[in-house]
Amino acid sequence: MKQKIIIALSGNPNAGKTTVFNAITGARQHIANYPGVTVEKKYGVVKHKGCEIEVVDLPGTYSLAAENIEPKAQHNETLLEVARAAVWLERENVETAPSEIEEKFLEPGARFLKYRQQMTNIDALQQQTALKRTIAGWMGTKLEYITRPLGFEYRTNIALVGGFAAKEVVISTLGTAYSLSDVDVDKADSLSEKLKKDPAWNPLQAFTLIIFTMLYVPCVATVVSIRKESSWKWAAFSIFFNLVVAYGVSLIIRQGGVFLGLGG
Image (tube, rainbow, N blue to C red; front, side, top):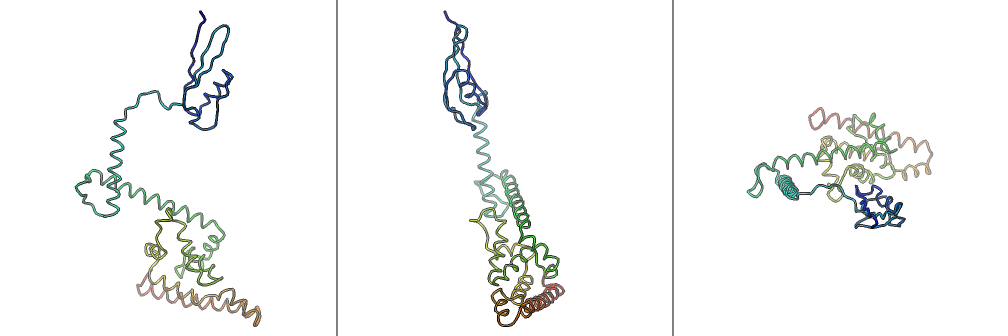
């Protein structure tokens, strides 16, 4: 009677079991560099010194221990209750839970909302850092040394540089600079809502920007027209003169408003 040996190849998914199976049996089972390729048992037979060896290629497994689904079901139910509490807290913004939500789930729900907000803030900081590393961000950051007395930060400076092409571009560029920190574009606030939430913005700051935008350099088309009608000297003078006037008037408005306690 011939001796028969059965060898089972068992292990984690994508561990190379099928490669070993093909090498031993000479089979050509499909292999790939990702888990889930072998979804059913494969058999192969090889003879060695009169002994018949049956090799079984088993699908990948993560554990040999039996799984009890009861704790997992309880865990999922707890997560569902915490999610309900978080949704209710976000919508109502109060501390007293309704009868359908247990009090013990309010604190985990509040912690989840806090964690989500912190992750959103981190993502916004990462987006701002990426913006600062661009050419426009570098220019805006460098200009802060000049525009800081006016209360302008790098994103406002980027918008003002873009406004040299056409002043109506200032608002759209400012909106783009602020929207880069949005995680969910569908839920993103408008520019006015973003500026309301930004502590650096207030009515005085907005008025200062409006005055500066109205008075600072004319657009490119105007500068080119001045050059054609006169000379580059007058074109350069129009740029420099308007910048100085805009800066001076905006500085008086900004610092005067801060002195009077209208903003800071």
